[in-house]
Length: 174
Image (cartoon, rainbow, N blue to C red; front, side, top):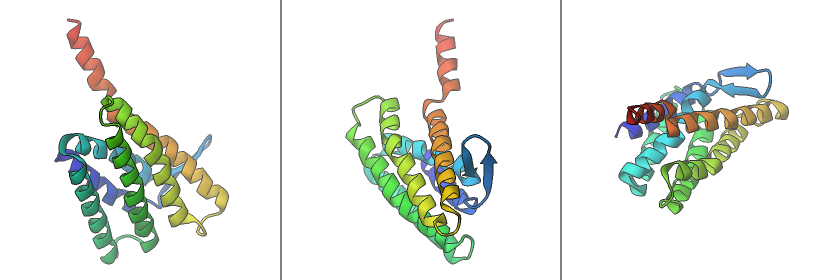
């Protein structure tokens, strides 16, 4: 349940921060939302492992409805939420089905394979819908590239929890 709540809260927080950008000198820029949203890919995978595919789709629906409610209350621009809803539904469905297809693989391989598709798909869909025509094409491309890199890093760190791994292996040696 923790990861389902984390997922839902992260989608809400990401929509509020989607237009706040941090510029990087070497590979473009990312929105503050990217730091938050990167968590959702692995949180979704954890819910899938613990509760199954049907509960994942329920969680995605709850997140989408709550994001829509926030928009109706005037909290977030329509183009951001429309982009978010479309990206969440399509990218998270792809993530869920790829994860399910590789359900017999190790945890790490399921996460890597599903996120290898859903992270770029989410970044492309969201940014093209939210920012095409708002920003120049080169800037949108820069945002997409930066987001893919950061979401992948955050997702990998969340999935593999290197500190937990190191602690478990250091205590096993004692």
